[in-house]
Length: 317
Ligand code: UDP
Ligand code: MG
View 1 (tube, helix red, strand yellow):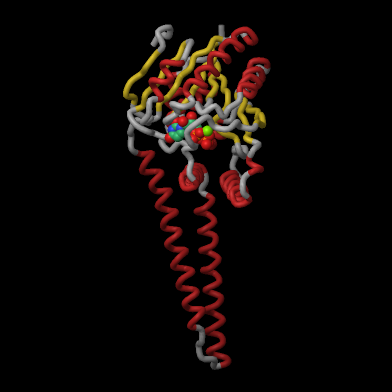
View 2 (cartoon, rainbow, N blue to C red; view 1 turned 135 degrees about the vertical axis):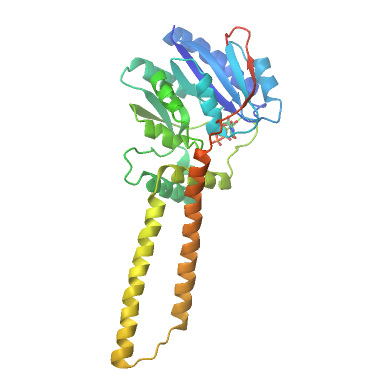
């Protein structure tokens, strides 16, 4: 029987654990009868500080393992660790907090096993409309910037919740980026992908791990890992202001010689100095970001460290 691996990263999800365990038991039963699929669950404990590991181990049925990382490496890296340990012909990545509905999982599984031409089925959150205008505008700007004239396009609001065929998983595993911006990597790999819209459920217990600030950080990582557009915009702007300066200078010289005008303009001087000084500093910071990406990538550190692997009795290592 073909095997489906669930890859589930978690960080302090002890409250959700029993619910998730029940979810997997049900899912396994349904896909066995409906699609003739076997199932294993590969959890990745991303440095939880609560009793998540015990709670998952106690409540899970079927074949499962928990890859316990040595500390918090971030969801992107946790997913990578999970992919490295998943053995399935298909891999379904899903969160542990019960936000991803069963019906959507089943729809994705059905799509991919009935359509041989399909390598990936991803999901698109359609609840973003309810969010604030500010967030919507920020999101739009982000996708416009990162997708501008790229050979591969990142679909808006497509997340990690997706199912992939083995060939795509293997492709993703060859990418050793330390700064993993998953949305970008999924698009970068290409393959035949299809999106399904869905509305996430409310989270069971706990709180989201994404603050506004961490989202901003992630966006910046995404852009600096996938796009040189910000650098080009600043260069173009610099070139334009430079050009403007030259013409303005010519104009002043012209005026002094032909009309004998003295040179006024203390305010314009201050404006020019502060604007250009500010731009210079901003550009330095931006350059620093890009340099930092390349430093981080050039260190040959492992992507993550495992403290211990926990397994159900019926699974072979
Ligand atoms: N998560 C993780 N490492 C982190 C942050 C989150 O493994 O550093 C897990 C978390 O436990 C959950 C999933 O990633 O299973 C999604 O996180 P969250 O629910 O906070 O994100 P949201 O659903 O709000 O986008
Ligand atoms: Mg969540």
